[in-house]
Amino acid sequence: MAQVLEFKLPDLGEGLTEAEIVRWLVEVGDVVAIDQPVVEVETAKAMVEVPCPYGGVVTARFGEEGTELPVGAPLLTVAVGATEAPASSSPASSGEDGASSAVDEPSAGSGNVLVGYGTGAPTARRRRIRPERVGATAAPAPAVPAAAQAPAPAAASVFVSGSAPVAAGEVNGEANGRPGPVAVISPLVRRLARQHEIDLRGLTGSGPDGLILRSDVDSAIRRAGEAVEAEPRTAAASVAAEAPTAVRAGAAAQDAERIPLRGVRGAVADKLSRSRTEIPDATCWVDADATELMAARAAMNAASGPSGGPKVSVLALLARICTAALARYPELNSTVDTAAREIVRLPGVHLGFAAQTERGLVVPVVRDAHTRNAESIGAEIARLTELARTGKLSPAQLTGGTFTLNNYGVFGVDGSTPIINHPEAAMLGVGRIMPKPWVHNGELAVRQVVQLSLTFDHRVCDGGTAGGFLRYVADCVERPAVLLRTL
Image (tube, rainbow, N blue to C red; front, side):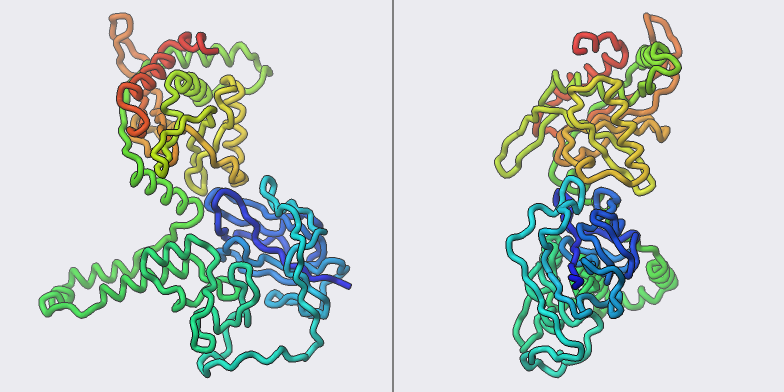
């Protein structure tokens, strides 16, 4: 007999609590194999294809494209052991074909939900739901108020934080007139509601089975703000509100486009806001003559020949210069433990670099950059950049950086004051390299000049250390032979 198994949205790594469905890769009735990708989701870190650990027939899908689901919410159900789609299956139901259904994953799954994370070892205990005859009635439920007996627009029961099903009327704490559990899984949603004094029991979730999502809380926050603005005004304020200028302003506000801060854009906003709030940063900068660096790069690429391997990029050379500078000034390869009031010096350099993609700014990380030469760093940067452009970076490739290199010169910009990539302690910004008048060997000449800027956490070091780091980087740019001592 076929066994209907429920596949839930797995943990996608490092604090991610939700994901948005971008594209379904299977339909109800399709036959799927173990570890076959079934849905493409977007998290705050990357676009990810989620493989299903079961093989069988898809009997139901939960959530339309564009829906945001919390980790642990049902994604789909699969009839394991079935050779064709059950006749009674539909997108809105599961486990109703007369077969036993297992709510928790059995040991037959692959355990390979997502490469690098997975489902882990199967649980020792499994809870089964016994099959019911068609037309059979459920056990009598406790009496509920008349208002709670109205037909619910969603399913009749929901799962709250992986617990047993809860009646739909209990989701908002109305069962038997007593407070009940709230259909919220994400701790971020609960914290957001607390910060804005939003009562979750008064919200109706838009997620599957009535789950309350972040978008529901955001809507409640906006409604609360609009209610405050709509309070009765004084007579003078009412007259001013009727003026043509105010009318036009109100109409403009109604026509304004609202773009949700979620996915990559939301993650960037949260991280940068936290950086500005927590880190007392300072910036210093210097102009450097990059003529010899550009000549050295041209010589290196010419020596490799037409088929001697990939070319060394300017970014790879600057990354190698950064690792050499961090070896001299390890204070900038650290983080601050605010709870313990300690500066944590990190043993290795995991170098992040800013990459602009169609989905926004991402920062892939070159692992163990301090052990690589310029050619190896360049090859890894090229590989990660291609993954970033196609949206295939994993969460592990976007986290764990200890220092960031930001080449904003590709946008035609000379200088900037970068925002530190929290929880790192520093970021080096590089402007465009362009010909400028420069005094060289006592004479005015046209040289290739670049502006370098360093933003650093003033808690980990003072200006002397930051200035020494930046001056060493500039010296290596002006005279690449300086690097020979560290190669």
